Image (cartoon, rainbow, N blue to C red; front, side, top):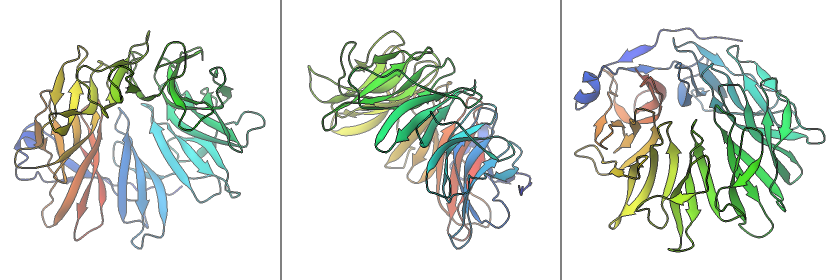
Length: 378
């Protein structure tokens, strides 16, 4: 496996990003493997491993890539097919995802530091599988499928599969997230158009509905933390419409205080602080809900007009973009631009994709004169 070993290249702080510069954040480029020119990255471990992809100058060659904390780039190998997708990474740097074989079938895989793909077993009689997440105990979750039938699966650290319990009368299921206690969220499908309901599996694999305690009702589970708290949205039968909601380990979804029709909670940290969106007045705002239901509006950087907030860490810091520039939000919802300029380059845009609990931020920077590069702020 070819490796690219290069020191992370620091880029100078941008004008107007004094807050980030004072905090000691510096942007470093994640270099592409040999033969490639542009990079993007989406996944970041607590130890600073990054995962993304690289393309050549013509856009014809593509490869998933893992970067070590020191900047070493390792291309990920596949299963003989032409497609791979890394979906999650744990704190040990083990990556979980999907790769196809030469016959076009998809299979659940993990990658270690070598970049070699390890194919996970499929349940007997099911020729295809997909991984959606992996936890720090190396338990993976996803689905196994036979023709149009798809069921939620959990793989143990040795890659052995187990079907998760199915709700009565369901015709399919999907496992999307697993926390470090082995609790899983996902969905179950029932006959009828659009008849999908959010579900939770406990560590033993027992299933429960999240929209209602006794029957399937419209709801979506989007994230789960290590306390077992779930973020998502549920149908409000009293007020009408789908609204942002949370579910504690014991319970079904409850609508967030003040959540509007069409609102959503899409992330929850390990302190039960939620990131989402709701309508306030005549505007849809990105907001944080704290564990007491208090709401903080995530404001754009002063002088900018629009923003997207993508991720939240356990300290309550959030990252995203404000007018096509990478930004960080404090616990009061105030934003500061991240340093994203390099002397001699003409910046086009930058984006902060995710932040870990060490305060490292993963994203990308685009330039008019050179290819886009994945970057990390430390």
